[in-house]
Length: 443
Image (cartoon, rainbow, N blue to C red):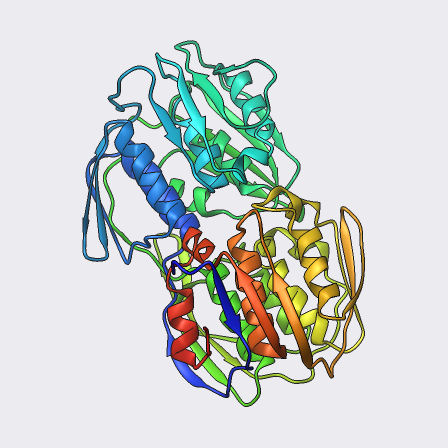
């Protein structure tokens, strides 16, 4: 969408539809990175064309990897582990993607040349020390020294060494970065990681890359070793649960509505949003469950739910719902009672300070909140019905803030002007098309 602003003046009317959302962004980026290290042609079906994923492909092409799109399929011709072929002084632009920016560093730890990594304004504000520091310990070099944000330069080393690494934030990006570094590192890397998404572990297992995992309630203990080679592999990318969450909440908050979201990735480390909403009384159901490439997929069934309950959100669900908290805040705004979300400072390490911006939008809607850098209390109003004019100017162009605002307008009413609609292309290019398919009136 090329418009600079969209206007929404009416709530969405009741709907009963089946939809498919765009392919899972986290899995797509990881598939592309692993395929570049495999031998021969790998193919991904239902490959999304979100900006984060396209930027991944552009970076790999600069590193000498051949890539071809055919309809919704993507082909990558891998050159093997550390098989990149590139000239001096290349620049890799990760755009808005923290996953790409952080994970691609681990594939460059043997680079003979300095490579510059850049990103957009938003990504350039985010902390990269969390991956720079462990990669330094493995043997990679970064310039300028002590710089913690993009742009940065990385130069590899032939003298790489395995490390013991403690990931204490619950960041799948940090954990995955160190795991991917094992592809080029002799010996065994040992990781103690706070619970987070396990897509990278699933790919390691699927590709038979040496990995051992032991779990307890709070941590995963992971041992990984360098493989001799990675065989090419084909996948069908399932729908993205983070994209699905916006339509789950729209359905819950709309009157007399139903939706089925087909073939969505419902990996247990990603469905915190469903668990939280069901604790609030949503009664969301998963059907037609299948397992593919180590990932659990299902159809998601949702019905309107007018009497949502407040929640004291268990912190053990935080990492599995980190990208969905903004949209969860809208349900808390409509729920009866006070909802409390704590230990969610990681929200401020995303594309924008989401905890701050999310609370500002709720306050604009007349919802009482108490917020600090780590938590938010939301005082719900079951009779929430907006009548005023509302303007959302999102200067960092955070795609999830944009989509949260659209869902708020369609669910609660009011006269909304929402800027930067093109930001949805970061993760969910078909968002507005699906909104219109359900009956949403956008101008």
